Image 1 (cartoon, rainbow, N blue to C red):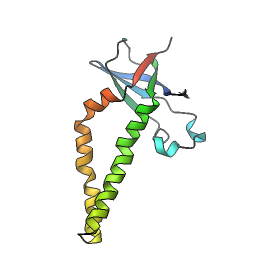
Image 2: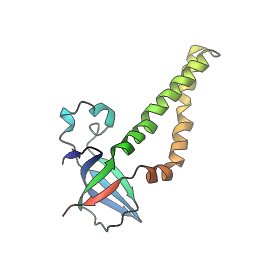
Image 3: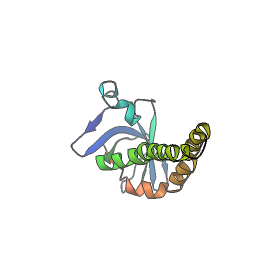
Image 4: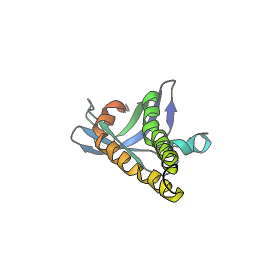
Length: 142
């Protein structure tokens, strides 16, 4: 039930909940260290009790309800936070600033919010690319 952090990876324990083709879906355990973490509001692990991670192209065979560790490199985690939170914030802010010069304030604000819809639709279609990029791996526990 704990999350380990080495100098370049995050490791979190979980249980295999589903196996779908070459993908393994792991339900991450509740993290007991979230209460004392200084950045818990940024990562999202403390917001709900059950998180699932889909890991593609695993070499090992897994069984349902098997306890495993999920590992992600810090650089991949930073990229994921950038594409999910940082870039959309600056996109929204940029649209708001540019549109406020040409449109009424309420319409500029609405446009800044609406621009997120096509952004997240594009992210959804780029899902296979991001699954290969982020290098999440599952490690069997002995």
